[in-house]
Image (cartoon, rainbow, N blue to C red; front, top):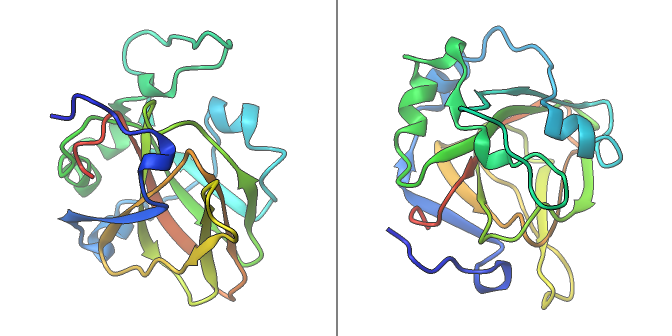
Length: 195
């Protein structure tokens, strides 16, 4: 188990999580009844950064009592309870593949034309993020720019069953300029043992 957590600029922009490989089709089946529903964190902070083509639905909810950070924001590490509709499914099995506890997680559907503007979420000693692409097209991109990068590192994350650390502590953005949906599972993780 990790004892010293690395800060944002000590970690790469992207890193493949080698011990996680998922069955994309099986995972997509768990979300056949997708409905757009923002959690309270996305409602509070996402609006200025998202357009109306960026849809999501929560996979986890508050476990126990919701606590707040010193700045008054909800502590998203409290969102560690798998929602009832995903308990006993392949979603729960995928969450169990990670060494560190999963917290706030959600399914993201970026319709054609969707984008999220460049932003920084939090330093990696608070939490990390892992993206699992489930369906995509060659024009769906994710970009990350650390403070030492002259320009952002831009990647197309293939829907091949891989899981990717995407550094939430650096300026990052995503967009779908293709003609089909870009779908990914985003997992927030309380710890860095999976890196």
